Image (tube, rainbow, N blue to C red; front, side, top):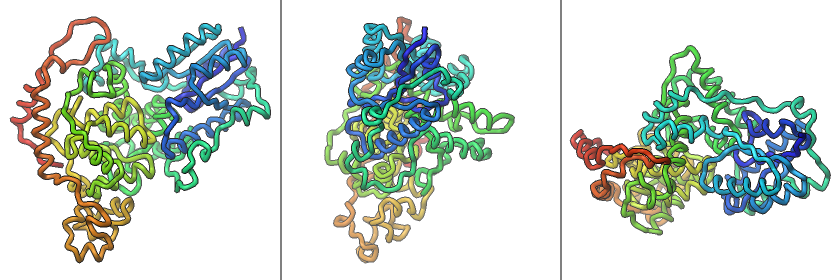
Length: 525
């Protein structure tokens, strides 16, 4: 039977390593590549995320047109829109890439039921992650692994990820037609950025343009740096370099302009026969961290929340809307923190260690605000705002889950100085402070009045006083964390089971903390 098929692009905005798209082409006479502007996902997106998405869609449309096809962009809820398209285009097959997010799973269950009602066959393929996440959980007796070491052991038993599949060619499309008419452009064209986001005209340079071709170009560029790739260790990269010290391929992997499996195997080719760094700090290690948090997000209920999350420490966070606003709007009075939050808003990306600094500052380090609030801000502003990774990293950095050395606190002053003594990063993103000498750039409130006047910036008038006294509040918060850990019962240290099984009792968190505190406590880093 020759099918009329919709391939539904959601993430996976690419032609390379897209097994669901190849499945669409099998026994296919007519192909409709569709992208839905879903109000649940796309309403209220910030300008940087809109710009990245529009770039990715234009690039995808351009690639499809080279195959004598095109992209159909449709607005509305998938449950409302797709059944109408099934009828209108007489569709018999629907294909898509599998997605593990809770919203996506609910949406896909509803759409699959509607497709069956319309006599439409549904095929999905796994290609957003390196592995089938359910398979990892199954291998771990129905539980999500809670340590990276355990995750490594599990994937070792599964073997290397599947090799990526090639992009479809003109030959693959020879017997497949995509009906196109002039009215289609008006009805199904990619909306202009100005239409989607009224502030678009005010935007400056775009440091990270969206799209598969840009993703592959950047990948090629980095893979040529053989020594850099082989020696890469994430903790040794700089959070405040003026140009990124990492690959910045994460936004492209997040929306699927770049396949994680393609990235993995290109790295494997570079590593072949050479001495290279290993997980968790290597580039392969970064892809496994992604897999680790995806697995946790599938295996742990309420993964993006504190309450109802069985592995998350329940902490009595403060509700201080003025503190949260100051952090979000880059006016904490700590230049390193404010420069990072300014870069985030302007560019949609910040270095991983910069994320560490601002997340620790917001939560357990200084402001004592629930990590869920920070999670929302990152979700709104990051180009690589990935549901599973965002939730997992915020739990980690607030020492709520996974990481438990709550006495290791990032200093909002000393940490940035390690890699940028002169404060060039601060001067770039907070030009108001650029005339401060290096000795005061991280602590302008300590500068004498004459120095502040000469710099053209008076603290308390032109730039805020520090929102808290870090040295005092961080010590107080360590004690608050200690109390929260003491309250946590020992039976919650294990990962919840997805299927019936015997619970293994882990060591009590309190016991672990007693052991840790016997060791020499390290000072603020």
